[in-house]
Length: 189
Image 1: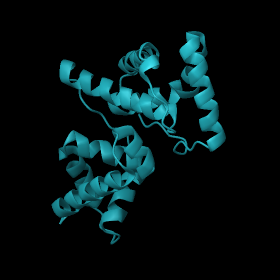
Image 2: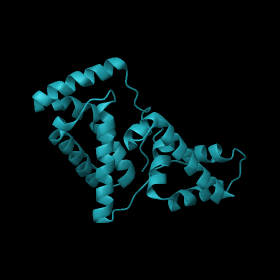
Image 3: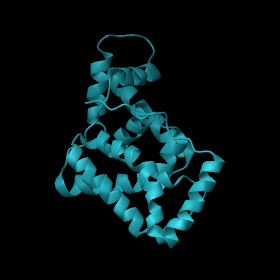
Image 4: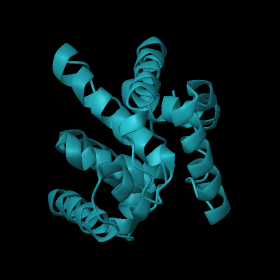
């Protein structure tokens, strides 16, 4: 099943200030945490479900993400980034924990147009059997490389967003993504 994603999150300075105000309020009154739950529940669920393809498990992981965020809210330090960046990092860690503990399968829900974008990035010369080869190559990549490809090409995230989620610089996210594309290109030729 393929899930469509809205445009990658962009957050204005006004929205950042609103999140900072709501963060201060939520630290004083946990009921105010509802603002973050309502704002980020659906995107976090989609992020998790995109990698699991099991709605019940995705719902459980998503619930765990918000529980951990609420329990650890006092430790969170606002640094000018969207609160969602922290939630995505928690989600990524929860998924990694699940994969380790339950040997759960990492799943990708994609459309051929997403794969075609990768093929075009690597080599714009059209060749019919390239799509199948790229799918097989992606399937053989390490999880960390698949994660980069997933966020950049399937979820349409900017390098800045990828960096925020992975806790690396924007430039490092770009370099790692292009190194992964180079790996795919080398295996393709």
